[in-house]
Length: 261
Image (cartoon, rainbow, N blue to C red; front, side):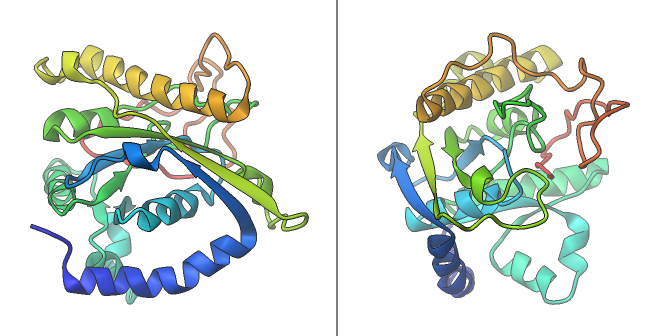
């Protein structure tokens, strides 16, 4: 397969105004681009510290010739104009029913076959860690990787949270900030590939992915991450939403879950 002409044209149109805006908002420093797999689709797993992270990561990937794909709520595809754009650039609709989950998986497979980069935040939402280290992950990225065999590329970035702090109401434009992006080697999930997709398998693969992201972020920050990863469930925090103190939600072990701020 391959990227369609319509999809490339739409990406080009969107990039024509998104990239200048991003370049104006912050300086960029990118490292490790050579580690991105070429000639194949990939699952890209970044850390998640602010609502503008998706644009930061999409900007980086697009500049490397990798078409960014996100997991989007299926209902968005029914919204006039927005739905048409999402379908044209082959974003992946996420449905929660069993039949819908299978359709989501097939859409994800098609995006990978096209050579795109499916962006999945293993944390599932903005990190709850007070110091903004990656928290305990959810299993969607690992599940998709083990079902498709696609390489998992860990990415850490740091700096965007200074432009738009977590759950902020306005941008902090001055002085001009810098965002740094660091790509790691594809995560080695070989020991999990032939194992049954049990909770133990998925949790182990997820830990491997989040560990790789954490190592990269520690390098960017020049700091040592905490010895124990932040676990919202143990802290009695909700896993989604701004008001995340209080009762916890259940862990997500669905077929193709995405991250929502």
